[in-house]
Image 1 (cartoon, rainbow, N blue to C red):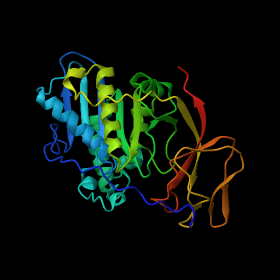
Image 2: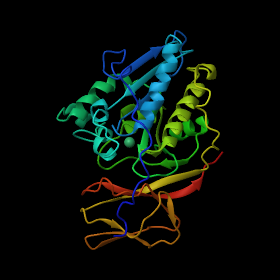
Image 3: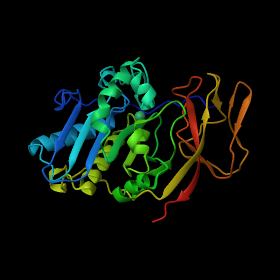
Image 4: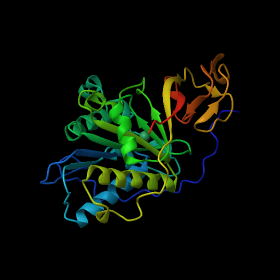
Amino acid sequence: VSGLPAPLPPFELQRPDLSSWRLGNTGTAGVWRFKAERPGPRVAITALIHGNELCGAWAAAGLLACLTRHGGALRRGELTIAFCNLDAFDRFDATEPDASRFVEEDLNRVWSPERLADACTRERRRAAELVPWLAEAEVLLDLHSMHEPGPPLLLTGPLASHLSLVRDLGLGGHVVVDAGHQEGVRLRDFGPFGDPVRRTRALLVECGWHGALSSRRVAEDATWRLMLHTGLLPAEQLPFDWKLPTPPAAWKLEVTGAVVARSTNFRFSRDFDNLACIPMAGTEIAADDGISFTTPYDDCVLVMPSLRQLRPGVTVVRLARRAPIAV
Ligand SMILES: [Zn+2]
């Protein structure tokens, strides 16, 4: 049947050994905090918001290894590194990688005051534990990977300060400007990170497909660039091969809406690649129990079309207009 998930390539990325890192040094499991004497930006790197997204855990563990080799000394500022959903990660199985995205609830939909206050799931309790370590960050790099193969996506919020972080880091891939998920608030949009007055800079990087070796390289590249840009660590304290020679992102995709499945009968009209561009407005892209979904404008880009988490209420694709990134 057209539109059903295509077979994925073999899952090549190994599960990292986090046994040295899971305790943390803050009293909160999986959370590390380093502070320099010299003032500087407060930076946070978050990995494993989704338990099956291993690339960020590789980068975070690699960075911790660098830091401990150098006695945990930053040049300036403050660095927080968090392995966010270790309970889900512990259940990871490469033969069924989607099963360990979360345990009871998606940890990336609970960052609103109401859900944080209502400790009814493991993930909400974990988010509430993480809040004190993340709420003061001025720069957030949230490392993720995707259900489907594709180029890296740099998910900034609608604020100019978010886009400026992408520009300053010079990351490769495509910028996606989106306001958030209807299902709940993501960490990237959590209180301080969505506040225009505080001018925090928060970026979610979808580094590639969950099982691709390249997703780890993209996560390490983003981490390397963040350490240099913020001045927390110099290049000589980081692995020499982490920086990738990719050209900086040239396109900005502004998400204008999302297609949300109404039923498990939702199907795409054909197998769309991630970032497929549909030239004509009014082209049918999907159907769901007799309801047809069409593109609202010319050159509509389909961002991360996927039925792997299909159930009523789940966003199955986001629609975007594209524009060159002004230099
Ligand atoms: Zn994710």
